[in-house]
Length: 191
Image (cartoon, rainbow, N blue to C red; front, side, top):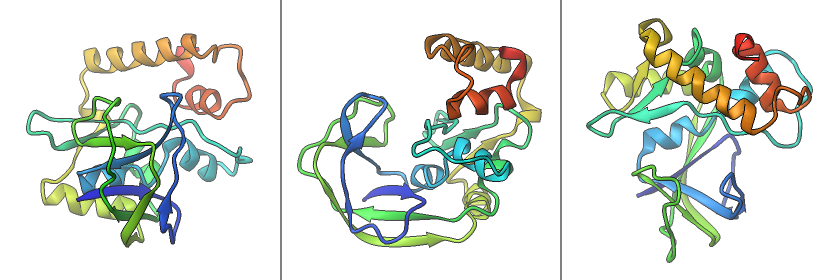
C-alpha cells in the first residue's frame, strides 16, 4: 500500500508540486506511521500556536529517522517538540494507487516519488495526530526520542546540522522567512 499524509481533506488526485529536490513530485510512503508524521509541518504548527501571519508556503520540517528495525522515530530537537507540533492538530492519511513510474531520490527506505498524478483510494481522518502517534507508539509502530533523553553529543550533532543549514540558506541575514523565524525561536543560541 502507498500512503500520503496531508492536512487537506477530500483529495481525490495528488498533483506533483515543486519539492526540495527542485523537481515536481508527489511523495508517497509504504509506511502508514511516516504518512502520519507528514500530516503536520512543525513550522506551520509553530505559526498557528503563536498566531503569526501565515505565508503561502512553509519550509518543511519533519524531524524523524528510523531505528535499526526500520521503525520510524520522531526525534525531539527541543523540549516537548512532539506534543507542541502535533497535539490538537488534525490530518488525513490517504491510501493511494501505485504510480507506474517512480523513484527514490530521498534515500528514505519506505518513500517514493513520482512525476505523475496519483489517485487516492481511501481517506482516513485523524482527529488528533498527537493522540494517534501515542497509540502507534504503544503498538510499536512508531517511537519518540524525547528531548530529555538525548545525550549531549547527539544534540551537538543536531545543532551542528542546523547551523550548517542556517549558513547554507543565509538565515543569519534573512529575518523574514518562516524557516528563519522558526529556527530563531527554537534555537536562538545558534544565531
